[in-house]
Image 1 (cartoon, helix red, strand yellow):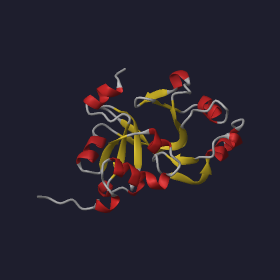
Image 2 (cartoon, one colour):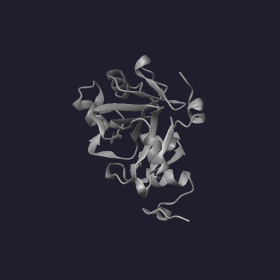
Image 3 (cartoon, helix red, strand yellow):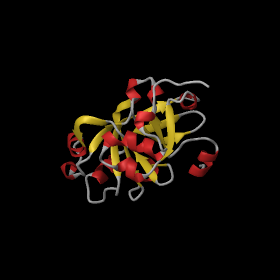
Image 4 (cartoon, rainbow, N blue to C red):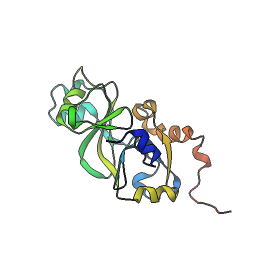
Length: 194
């Protein structure tokens, strides 16, 4: 298994943020911020961080799934993680909870888990310090993400826990842009040439 540093050196974006530009051209990703969970020569996969499912909170979802103690889980939004596998749940979390081989390390210090064990942890006093629940994910085939970045559909930024796990999804896109020194009003949907 290669390290996150090795991926960065080879151009892979594991653990980075993708910030949709006005050139994205796909309403499913308009003004989204995506945490890249995995990226290699064949595929890329990420979780949208700023699209809450309307009216669905984590305690409600856990109760619907009959998770014992679910109503006592942290009151956080459930996110629309992306258009792929929308009926499957993914938990992005700090590594103070590890579900063994079911937890895939993403970035340098986070895990991605999609098992009953992590749901039980979310409903208990042994929940991860930081976690978010997403339904579905964003996925790309070989070379697709690289092509979109070359067409300026995505901006790339370093990720941080404050941005990933805060409870203000409406502000994440502007906050992610500010990490790059960009303000939304200076972005335009048309590209110029010199």
